[in-house]
Image (cartoon, one colour):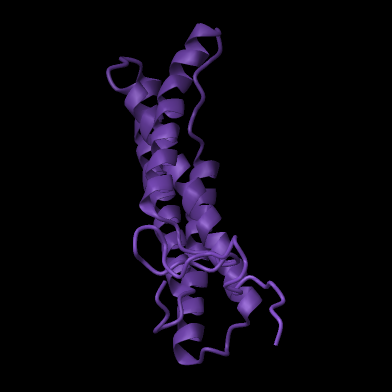
Length: 177
């Protein structure tokens, strides 16, 4: 039978090897994996720098320092609760019966978890940086911004953790990754 030159054809010069360069199994080109620690740490550091420089930029430009509102904190807590509930329901559906959750729904939830984890890491760093910028400021309003930034760190951390739990819940038992 003649070769058609498909992606698995050994006659193709651009054929992908069976193993990744690090020796582990290679991921198929259409798959989405869970979020690793590197992008989360990178976005957390970016958020930390931006959050810390926000106070300085506002003062240099002559603007009032932004406040951390209770609405934004409540919204983050609500998102964390929704993600946590979705993670629990997804885990229950996948563990009970592998066919209980459609493939496209599982991929959608995985991508949602991935996106929320990245945003959660960025916001966690941003609230932490803004809180650090409030340290040493003698203004009573700075104390309020400091403890609300601390609550923001907790809420963003909850979004990050529940998003990672949602990603993990999408894994089918027995799959390599």
